[in-house]
Image 1: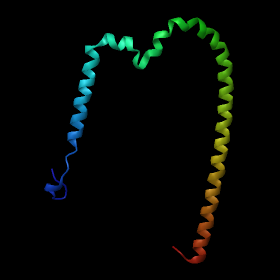
Image 2: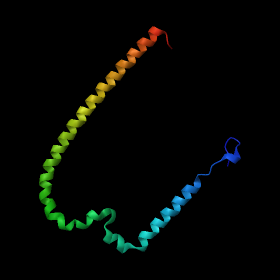
Image 3: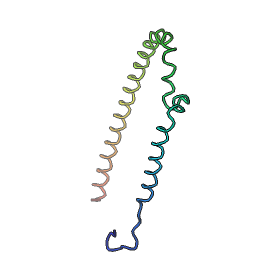
Image 4: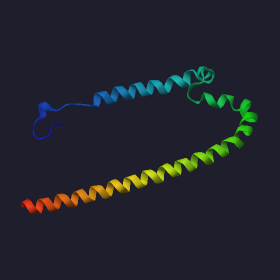
Length: 111
């Protein structure tokens, strides 16, 4: 395949894709061969293994965390309002600067 009539200067980038596909296929096959190892090693979802033992402690912590989450929401809402106000101020400053630039261009007869 050549673009613009230059068949000798075409670079084939599909080889890298093929290599990645082969590696992905190998990675897919390995977990199927060794399911017992993945369960014991913890892996990505290791936090699910301790769910049963933590139910009693989590119910007590939920009451405290709901208060904390309300405070966090209020703080987050306040920060978002402040950030929005700052963005509006900066936007207004940019608009004023654009208007000044247009006036200067008109004075200098620049089009």
